[in-house]
Length: 332
Image (tube, one colour):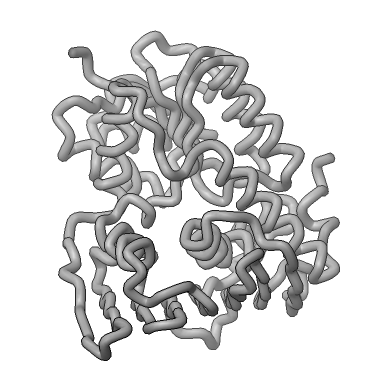
């Protein structure tokens, strides 16, 4: 079997841990090509990480015959353009989160995937770690009864150095987009449906992106999700998920990256407390292994298809409810 050839768009900070390091552990994966805004950056990156070919631009990476899968970690405002070009060129795409600037872009991307017959996968890496699957298994087994309330938080202090894309409106910045998309995805994955009602409020930075966002989602079962995200400098790192059910509860410390230290505890309906073992293999390694296998076998993945539209719709609605819809539709 030929190795899966991956083409990399840009030399983003996330790429090393999200793709390059996991690829080194998989014998059937090869880093085939890379391009960056400056060729010298791509050459340096390729030499450091043994990427086989360097090209002058993203289009050449997409056109490369040795590339089967495009990894797109570009700023959010460039996701749609280059993902669609890759799909139209007959390549599969692993696109970083958050998927798109808005629902219109997400629909266009998914339409391109359907027309091309190629796979389009959103890189919510946490979903591939067995710890999160354990959490889902407990819920599905009825260990805590029916989920009634979900509380999720992701806070990271992110300094604006004048060019930080997470602090720029035009590149899809904001606490909810970059950080809150995770608690939202945890909630959507656990509930398995889109919310019926959404309310939200935000506080903005001087340049106009949301520094804090709080959102409340209500689902058809009556369950509510309370989501919090902040990139304020006075916030300490926090990634947490708590589920309250009719019979018990689940507490998950660091569902984002369990391999970096996490705790997953179940208090079931009998009063017993159970703590899950946590694998130290990275979420990214699990993700890339799952993607490679799915492209070989055709097996569906949990971060592609309909959940992408549910996620993007909810993101748009949260911003609209917070009075910030215009931030997500600058390019339309």
